Every structure is written in C-alpha cells, then in structure tokens.
Length: 112
Image (cartoon, rainbow, N blue to C red; front, side, top):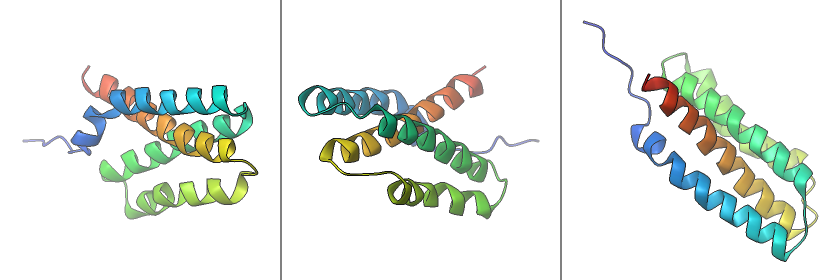
C-alpha cells in the first residue's frame, strides 16, 4: 500500500488567491510609484526556486532542501538593490507571486 506524500495542502490550495493578491500589490506599486521590473523579475524567479526547493523537502528528498528553500529570500534581500520602497514592494510581491505560481503548477500537475 503506497501512501502519497502530503505536501502543505492548505498552502497549495490557497496559491491562486495568493497570486491574485500579489499581482494587485505589484500593479499598484508600479502604477503609483515607479516601475522596477528587474527587481520584480529576480523576485519571481527566486520565489519559484524557493517553492521548488520546499516542494522537494515536502516530498521527502531531504532536509537540505528545506534549509536552501527558506534561505533563498534572505539571499534575494542581500543581492537585490533596494534603493526605493517600490523595489522592496516588488521584491516581496514578486517573490510570493513566484512561490504561489509554482505551488499552483504543482497542484495542476498533481491532480492529473
């Protein structure tokens, strides 16, 4: 009897609403303040990588994936130039958008 691994199901199920909220924050920040697309791009990629690492941990691949997955946001903050409040908003909203998007893709693929 093979038991399917339990992946943070509540997080995976809330991913679509997370994507909507983070897109709204990014759009408002970029319309009202200034466009900072480079920071937003780095943040989205960082969120996707972080989610992939944490999914690997949740699926039983080892604790190193957990450490890398939760350390990635710190690395993004250290390496991304945050000269304005818009850059910070883009970093946070982009990271969580990428994270939620990766979880949403996982949810779609796991249901097949």
